[in-house]
Image (cartoon, rainbow, N blue to C red; front, side):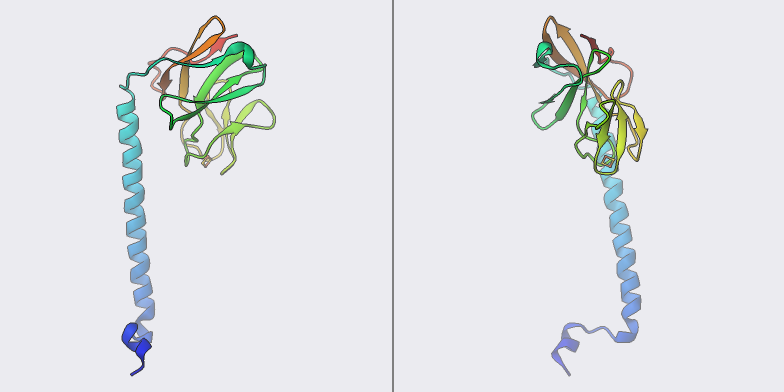
Length: 170
Ligand code: FES
């Protein structure tokens, strides 16, 4: 008998059953992985609601012109965020992680929306709500506190409505 028959001892006639079984295993494992991933995201969101956030100076308002943006990290160094000085003269900030699959969101070319370039998701620059595309939830808002020219991040609003408004008038 040839060596390859020893290594691959499956009869050719049964190949499609093996393939079907492997496909079934793949589906079960993928579904289980997605279930665990979603459960982890849910648990993390639940526990972050009670998190106590520190104050962090993120920018000087005078450094950001109307229509300008600034990237920063909050509440931790691994949490990218984006600050906007909107055309309506407000400061708003959001997590930069898209709520679909965590790609980094950026200002859209029209200057009026926030875009996720991965799957063409769009969010409102004014309140972070989903305008278009696959993202299932609004962007988490970074709660801001303006003291004179200083813009401070003081919390993260995951959408519970318990936090004060995120925006700060210029
Ligand atoms: S990751 Fe943002 S739309 Fe898919």
